[in-house]
Length: 339
Image 1: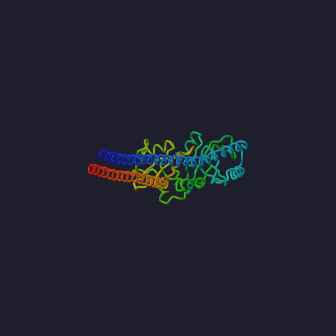
Image 2: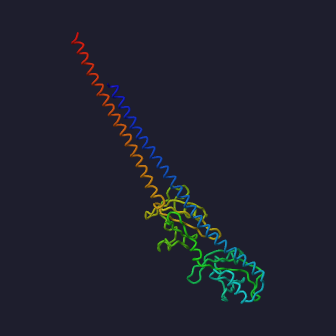
């Protein structure tokens, strides 16, 4: 009888161990699925920021191509009077805010016939001193502009040799190119300069989110699960090196975000996309946890039912054995009485 009870106990113990093993296995599986899902989201966001960067790259490349065509046409014309120069400038780059022909001394004439002198700034030095084309931020009064400048040759206006062609575009020309369709449009796009100043942004940002220095927000942030980026300095260096990453960041105020970034070619602009972690993986985490808990609960119910069944069968078997033993004892008593 003791052997039978021991067998039942062993069966129950095995079923309990199986229950624990299934629970641990499912927990590990869910954790692995969650990690893979997070990595997939990071990769997708990294692809998104590259798409936005490519749109800006294409716009900039198109402007350079049109300026090269304009340069060739001006060289073919050679000498012009001011009226002809104005007419040509007006019809060449129609979407510019202003386009200018500039002499070596910095004197310019624009498409409206306005004349003046360019103030040499640090941003213009590569163009004026090194004859290298530039793409940089500029201002016209309170208007923010993007300035494209390139050296040209063999062009004169009323006998004055022109050395540079300069075109100014309003920031809105580039602002309208920003969009992201992934994550239900929750991605907040900012284009920043090397100082972290927000230059361009999507219209889903609050007013206070467009007026700050980007890096300052993450000075005391926690950079989660990133081997290369552990603090604000390594984060800033990674961005300014032109790296393309997507990382998880928890800011000082507790906001849990995923940030992706990439550098625009030909200008010191950096595209960043910030998406709330919960909007990317929160719902997925809830679904995974719900499925996991349902699966664990179902497993526990099955194992518990199996335990109850084993106990019931064991109890029933014991009852049968007792009745059999009682019958044998009765038969033995009858045999003895008969003798």
